[in-house]
Amino acid sequence: MDTLLRLLSDGRFHSGEELGAALGVSRSAVWKYLRSFEGEYDIELFKVPGRGYRLAEPLSLLSYEDCSVVLARLRWELCLRETVDSTNAEALRLLRSDVVAPFVVLAERQTNGRGRRGRVWASPPAQNLYYSLALKIVNGSGGLSGLSLVVGLAVLRALRRAGVTGAGLKWPNDLYVGGKKIAGILLELTGDPADVCHVIIGIGINVNMISGGLDIGQPWTSVRAQTGVLADRSELANFVSESLHHYLAMHAREGFSSLRGEWEANNIWQGKRCTLSSGTQQVKGLMVGIDEQGALRLLVDGLGEQRFSGGELSLRLDHDS
Image 1 (cartoon, one colour):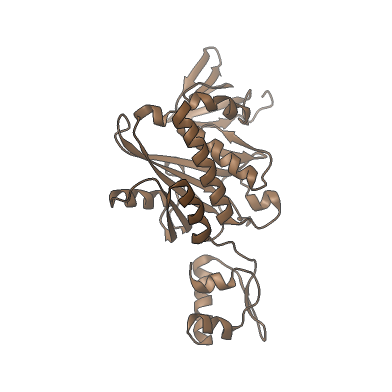
Image 2 (cartoon, rainbow, N blue to C red):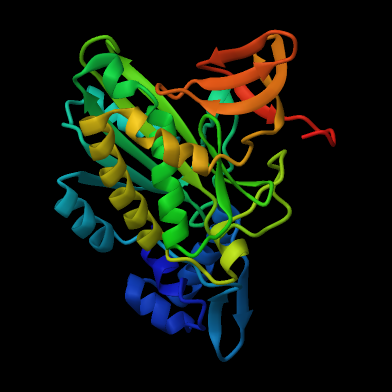
């Protein structure tokens, strides 16, 4: 992120002379930079004669130093970017340029953030967590079984460490608080999933986003909305990294079955009537849990228990659940 924005991120007034000296430019040049920032980053700026400039609200910018220290302990590399199309796409490019996994891509903003099934993931600059972990998988389907659900548990633990209570898991890869989405997961594979491949674990968490003007298309919340304070995005990134390391190690040692009970204990739709959408088909039934591979167990009307390993689960809006 630009030096100018880092200087202003504390939300305090800074004079044009001070900012110009830090950048080695004139005060008029500072004003031009600030004007461009307002448009490019959608940031509200206050200008007060005799006091200088300040942001309407402070920002929590990512710290390479803080994040790299934690990742070094985990033996993961850090690739921090100011702007990318998406952190998953950047991770894929790095793999293709022979960067050795595991490594984490973090970005201040995404210009083309992606959710599942090609959906747009809202990515305002310096507001949320845009995080991708690239891993090498050497044990084929065993290393992939239930992986998105394992990642969900890791993100859930990170959110709780950040002070978010009441969060729960939605099969297969979303996290909600009070019926509002707070985080999502997107896994993408490259290579042979039956042999040796790489998986890119993309995680998006709404952190300090509070604006009601964003066109997201579904109810959402954020860490800040839940805790009432500006969250440290670097700290949250470290919580995610540490939690991922813990759960991925357990998954590698013991398989998903060892984590099945914990996932079900945090399943927000356990015992509720749901509709499973898969392509053009919809299946209605009662959610009874997941199996040892992470597949959905649904008690389908008139057909008994059925299992599904893909699709998007949505809660039926009736009163019999």
